[in-house]
Image (tube, rainbow, N blue to C red; front, side, top):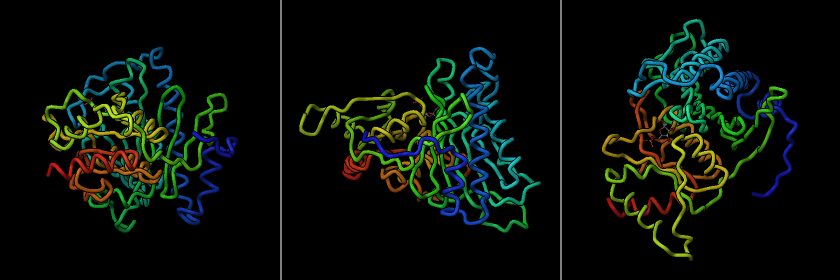
Length: 337
Ligand code: P6P
């Protein structure tokens, strides 16, 4: 990775203010929202990093809308982000992976709607593997004079005002885009500030690495099986076989791919015939970031960001990462149709 001339002394707040006039004009509302999410992320990071000491590990004792067991830290992170969004006064509705129904903030006639996965990959928490928060921000379509409706939230990913994630790993990083490229920030715990790490991340065009749960291969579409068989063949000229990296936390797998390149795949399988990952708060925000960094994000038949959503918790197949990697997969998918 080439060294860039980046001002590492720039904080998230300073960077947002300097960029503000490029994406939301004089209002500054989106800037405020990003800063509020950054604050919630610092609080979640503090608890994630000491979960083993503060009895925040383990099951919460309930299941979410997808029938998955909820961890204590899921609930903590969910509460922190909901509070930050409610305090902002500029969010009219929010949708969390942890809440069956959308949440209207009647007190706010805010312009924005926020989808979020408060703690993605939370099954990894108890074994100290990286997890993350994912967020996706839209401007509401209806007038601020009337309560926001579900139709305000069901917009294709191309309409996102901003999207990003926080990765709670060996360091805590916040990565976001407002449509003008991808920027990353690293939390300096000694001063409690996110400091600029990269102001224009570009995903490598090709890397011989792939990320998929091979355990579900029997249920994959034929084109995916053919592609995976192809990348396992020995051919030094095309850098095959590729190596497999799979953490089981979408944010962690895609953060690696954003920086090093490769392809992430979560195809339909027997248990998840429409894919497992959630369109509005996993596929769209991560797809927006990957595309803004120069990569591709497909659902097997078209761009993920062009899917017209029908429900707030719907899932989608996911194939995203380096342009050449994804284009090779698409060749196999189109052959098998
Ligand atoms: P599997 C975590 O539960 C998650 O939603 C994503 O973060 C991750 O990529 C995927 O599910 C892992 O799913 O079926 O491989 O365990």
